[in-house]
Image 1 (cartoon, rainbow, N blue to C red):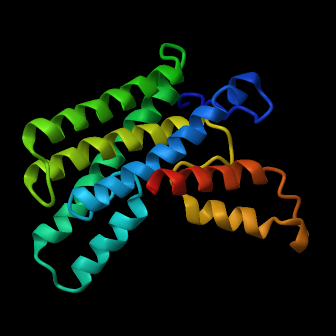
Image 2: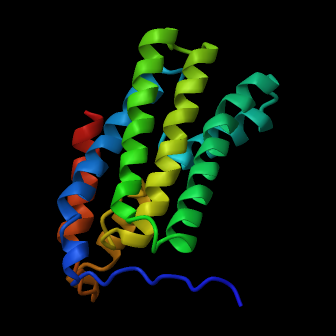
Length: 196
């Protein structure tokens, strides 16, 4: 038999409640991070993989040079590695590693990317910019894996389309209970404020 999968914490558990403010801050940070990445690092997202996947597909379908497609595949690959590593750490070694400590790795990757930006002169579409986006995407993949295990349900840090759909489709007006409306709209609001 395989390793036992930990179940996500219930919303009412004290451990889960304690990270709600941090998750909302992360939502704002992710909005800011994607805005900065997109505007300053060559139109590539470091956190929102849906955008990179869409742009890669459009570039491929419209016959753009391979370099254009690769630019989007770098963060997609790095994010994937981060998510796999995060899942492995949390599911296989959870007894050894407190999940909250894994956020320190994410923080370290963001700091490293910031230093790389300054030292390497990451700007626009140069190789340094691609490297910085890759390091950031690695951290965001790890962060998303962590939140899947220890995060508060319905507080999104990057899946705003689905979060908005859940919030609106479960309004009492349409027969839903929208029990977590404050978390859903709170994460959307923090993401938007961060991007502004």
